Length: 188
Image (cartoon, rainbow, N blue to C red; front, top):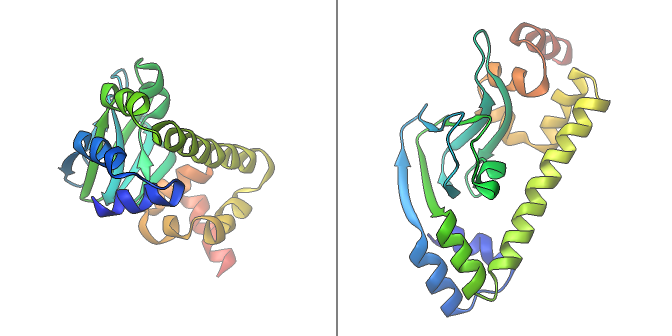
């Protein structure tokens, strides 16, 4: 729980009373590798902080899943659009490794927003960070070649290269695993 407190204190100083309320709502949950956290058609009920592990966001397809996002230790994650609207998700989330999450349910988060001085600031900053990641990825898909997108991962998100299986990386940058292998051979 210290990890999440440190993360929040980078955004805004926490009073003891704000932290007490916030931490009282957190539920620690552990998941095995390859556990589906949320299926298509289900409503996202939790905002999660990853204490340990990694998670992917994807569209399951018959031949090959389409992976469009990853979340790692020290980050908040959720099927955020479903969480905000409390409507069915159009994609799934899955653990890639053994994962430990600190979870807040929707109603508890609304209470934190109402009863703390810092809740809305943390919510806004977290939403802004998620938006920037999504926006950068969309611009990259529109403007960069597959090779450029792969090379950007080395500088922008090196954790992806180290921790994510190649088939998911290939999907993330919009190519087949075979095409990613060719790109990697050209680069090395």
